[in-house]
Each structure stands twice: as structure tokens, then as C-alpha cells.
Length: 188
Image 1 (cartoon, rainbow, N blue to C red):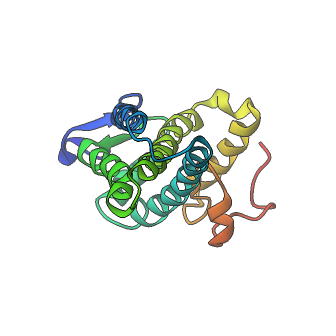
Image 2: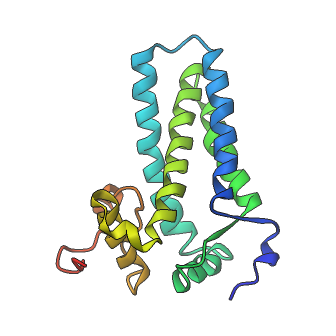
């Protein structure tokens, strides 16, 4: 077992949603005070942010959590003991949330558009936290979309760590050649 004290303060679900919820609240507050985005553009940017989150989640999972120490070691512990709630270092959570909320503000000319896009990223992160927690609960396997995601994630956890990195979506696995073939996936 990994001694999680070595990574500083760490959070487990449901505490892992606290930082993104605070960030989302601050982004909503900022959005209400920024008038340079109309409703249609805001909806599009929010959905775009959610889609970009699925790419970020894929890249983080594939390249950071499976290749870079100490994240790799911590993540492998999660693979070996998936029933134990995954613990996330507070510093890692803080850096991730600040990056998701702050980078668009630094890179985007329109503050309002950046805030809405950041909101989509943070919503994606929250969705990932909630869905990933559910994927490690047996009863989710009986639900339609969640059951499909459970089978996909379970495949990744049990001897196929180089495939099926997407939690919310399989799109990036398909595009980057890490989606398991139909025959490889059990129907369970």
C-alpha cells in the first residue's frame, strides 16, 4: 500500500469535488458580472469546454497517471485496490483547478468567453469525479450509459492498462488508437 502521507494532504471522494465546486461558483459569479458573451455563444463555449475536458482527462490519465512518478505509483495503487476511494493530493487538485480555471483567462482575449470556457472545463472535471466514483460501485453496472462506461473502465483496470483511458468518453481512445476492439470487451 502506498503511504499517502508522503504526498502531503490528500482528498478522497466526496472531498475531491470541493475545489472544483468553489472554482465553478467563482466562475459563475464572474460570468454574471461580465457582459461580453451572448447566451448562444456561452452555451457553445460551455459545451466546447466540456469536450476539451474529455481530451485533458484522456491525456492526464494516459501520460501523467500511467507514466510519470510519483503519479504512476499512486495510480497503480488505485488499479490494485479499485474498491478503496482514490486519494488525490491537495496540491495536485489545486494546480489542476487553477490551470483549468486560469489558463483560459490568460490565453483568451475575451474575459467573458474565457470564463464560460473555463466553466465547461470545470464542469467536465466535476463530471469526471462523480462518474469515476460511480464506476467503482457495483450497482452502476446495471445502468445503461454508466454500465457501458463501467465495463470500459473495468476493462482498463483488469490487465489492459495500455487501453481504454477515457472515463467520460471513448472518442479520444478511438482517435489515438487506445480503444479496445469489440471482441476484447466483455459483455458482463
